[in-house]
Amino acid sequence: MNYQVPQFIEIEDKIFGPLTLKQFIYLAGGAGISFLIYRFITISFIAFLLIILVMILAFALAFYKVNNKPLINMIEYAFNYFFHNKLYLWKKEDPAQNSAKNPMTKEDKEYAKLVVPKLSESRLKDLAWSLDINESIYSNKNQR
Image (cartoon, rainbow, N blue to C red; front, side, top):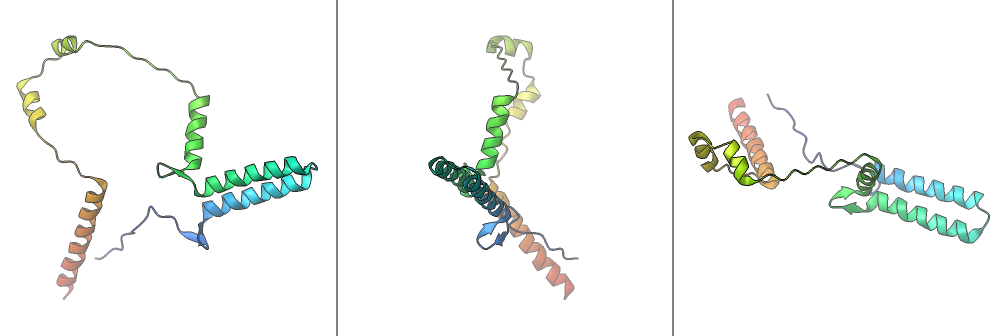
């Protein structure tokens, strides 16, 4: 039985022209807040500065990424860092005392010698892709 496996699930759908839903909401929210500032602040110079700041923030939230993560995640991490409790503990241990407490057995030494190959993300995707191709070829041969 063939099943459709979703591809490219990490890419968001473009709903409003070239914008995703999140980008559109950030820009529409920035435009709405800017309009409210324009309507309710009578001093035009201050209103203009606030509107510029709000629009810069809206564009940054919509388009700017730090280490391939959206800016909103970085803002969330910053708030969590500043407003949550922090407890840092460090206990220095002497390596000689640590090895005296837990001597390695012969089995542990043999296990430490084993080399485990690492799969990178791209290698893993290539492997999954080739398995999907081989599965579809194999299922097509069985249907004939």
